[in-house]
Image (cartoon, rainbow, N blue to C red; front, side):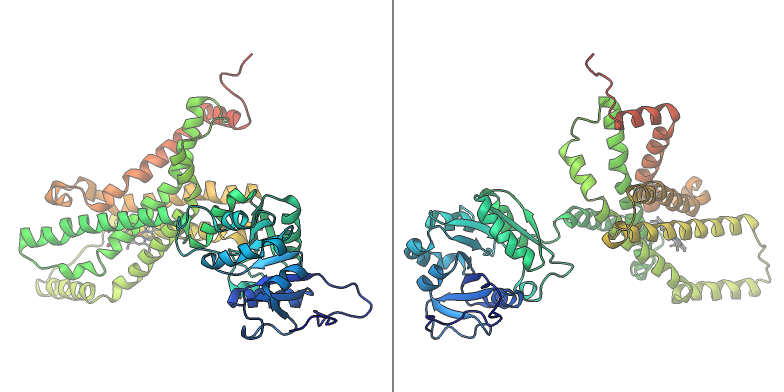
Amino acid sequence: VKTDGLPLNPLRTAAGPEPELLCIFGTGDLGRSLGQRLLQTGYRVVYGSRRPHSCGPVPQGAQVLSHAAAAQSAKLVFICVHREHYDFLEALAPQLKGKVLVDVSNNLKKNLYPEANAEYLQRLIPGAFVVKAFNTLSAWALQNGPSDANRQVFLCGDSAEAKQQVSDVATRLSFSVVDRGSLSAARELEDFPLQLFPEWRLPLWIATGLTASFFFYAVIVDIVYSYVTYKKDTSFRIMVSLANKVFPIVSLIMLSLCYLPGVLASFFQLYRGTKYRRFPDWLDRWMLCRKQLGLLALGFASLHVLYTLLIPIRYYVRYKIKDSTVKTIRENKTVDFETSTAWYTDSYYSMGILGFGLYVILGISSLPSVSNALSWREFNFIQSKLGYLTLFFCTFHTYLFGWNRFLRSSTYKFWVPPPYMLCLVVPTVVLLLKLLLLLPCVDRTVTRIRQGWERNEPE
Ligand code: HEM
């Protein structure tokens, strides 16, 4: 393709200034999508290719030249080539001298190479200004522009001027730019696309661990106990009864785990008498995944509600009701209405429903689109005050469910407490610690510390 005298941009008008020319090395998916978007935004685009005459389709309006010719014609070059093929760039060092090279590459695994791709590129072409950018976007996102999931372009590089040029292009493509500093941050940026829901990892581990442990425990004290003691096979209970034990239990523990770090943080501050010392790392990490813990807990509570709706239509439950009705008639007995039982069952249902209602409000208000619309005070009110109220209702629901069973020896199969009693430990501790913090003298000191007061302030 000859360039002499050819306008490289179809959008160019006779009167307007000539749009900037950008160069792309590589005509794969990413290179093509990027080129198309740049052309739509009003840039001129030239591709550098090993085989300019047979490189496959490129977006309409773009030119294809040899690598050397393309590099020479533009100030900014996007390197849309895999790192394994970078060595051909070394021969182009004279043409790339002084140019801004945008490294958009990613790797298939972490720590595959001793240095980041962008740092390697900078080593190959020391005379160029390498900027790492656009690597967290997919070809689809580049072609279609920013969407909710792909709004940010992270970049890093050693030259402020080069970063500014890349940042201008990203802004014109409607992305918002996040500058992550010098080129030494490139490895971190290259690891971003390899991460899969990093902040969900710990909550998912906790949820899986709790579910497995409580399921195992429930199988022993429920099904194995019936088999060993009465020679009765009650294994059918696994599907609904056990699920409807384990899910609410895990939910309640995880909800209390959302509030435990906040309470611990207050005690740390009280103990140290200052807010200016960092919390231990484990507490920081725990605090950062509270939202994920809470959302998972809400998921488990919803499962409990769905399973509870199922109770009246279960074959086992309907059979029990019919059987006891027939027996009562046969034996010509009457069953007296017990007001206390009605009170206790209605109360624990009601507490459960109130708890679940607030739970849903907490979940909804933690969604970014909702929380962005709230002031800090409103968000804090919902997540803290309503949060503790939710924990209180759900814990009370479980205590009421236990009712007088706490004192019956038949409750303690194999002499161990049933799972719901075990799960009450953490929420009870959290609520008691919170009550302690609400005592006026303690509350006053915590508030003062949070306003900047220090117990051992130098005179
Ligand atoms: C148990 C109803 C919400 C925690 C129960 C049971 C019922 C029930 C009927 C007894 C299940 C059985 O006999 O096997 C409800 C209703 C709710 C609700 C109608 C709301 C619409 C919640 C919430 C939590 C929770 C939000 C807390 C996360 C528990 C616990 C148990 C339980 C820990 C004891 C499980 C066991 O060992 O059997 N609930 N519940 N519930 N519920 Fe709820």
